Image (cartoon, rainbow, N blue to C red):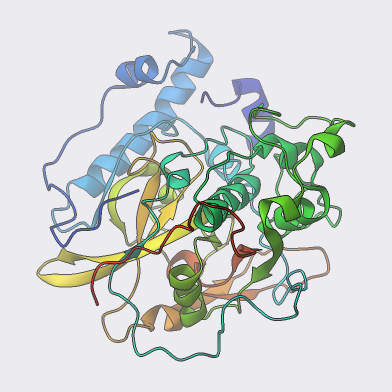
Length: 407
């Protein structure tokens, strides 16, 4: 995925991981490759000696210095890498996010029978210490949004694919391009839709009203495209997929997120992908438990939460969330990451790790909305969770069972 041409950038710049209690990773320090090696590995077409080559080399050198400095710390919880975004500008990395998390308190579509699929008022003594939907066939495939800011569409469809498999024990791959081209963001909440930002709410509501194509019917183009007029007749209706509605969890609460994850399936969550580690955030993540999230965080990216667990750090248990990204399998731990889940003092410690998103309009808020919003959990992960509500399977194939290990 090469970055945009130099001229375009200057115009802007200038006015599934295995569960284990073993140590998270090796502490061997490996320095970053040279820029020449990076260019060859990622098939960049910069001409040696050109202005762009020199400029990109400078960006890469800055990233490599930060990555090598981080990896030199033997007490680190995660390892950084000069991956495919190492020669990007901060603006280009922000373009990978494309999330509009919607207004605080926004309601989900009304359920068919008026009741939520999960009894959020129920009390449970404890949840399993390890839980993951990573065994799903649908989660073994990782979407790659490219340079289009379509994480909102990719994450919503990945969640739908997972819930469809859970309900039917069958798999389908849905068209991200269908949502990018056709699901409108009419309120311009931090973006204009398509590759320029929207929400999982918009994605799920569009599917509910218009259905969805498969990837084979409308392959991904990595860019905006005019919505084809013949889509309606070719789309699979939400009802035929078993999708009844979609739901949004209460904001900044731990139990509803974990309960829904364990009892129902994966969730689309909003995260501050730029939080921590200078302005690189998770773009340089390679493996381990990412623990650089700040309390004050700008929510700007959508990911799929599919599990949680614990690992050892310095002889102590360290909790983590398991998330699947939409940046391809060559990012992170095979397209996934582990993010710190605070459980040292109480299982709900995440709920009390709160800060403020002071720039909700920066790729997230709506015109006329609040100037700030409260966000809780690592990188704001508890602020918003959405998922499709499916009907009981009407098929000879039994539904997929939850998988967890021990309490």
